[in-house]
Image (cartoon, rainbow, N blue to C red):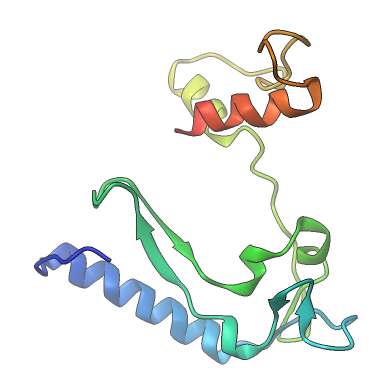
Length: 140
């Protein structure tokens, strides 16, 4: 954790996380098919719902994503089985979101998967890993 002095913005962000955790705290989040509240080594009970914001490189402008909820630590197959207050959830797939937003901003319509690159383009990277590597580079 990095020490900092409060500003109106940090106070606003902290209040946002507090309100989010309050809403999440009041919700019943569950995977009903589980016999025990655990997926692999991840506890899926009410004690593991709190979130926090994490910023990159000690910069308030870098990321600030919410982290910590148990649902962020399980795979998409298990996430698709989550219920909130006894209602099934839907996970929206934001595939290629950043590239799509950039192309729209440039006035170019994406009609293909921008991460679908020819095999061998990244020397030494197996074809099945290339998409992930390119995605990581773009998301930086």
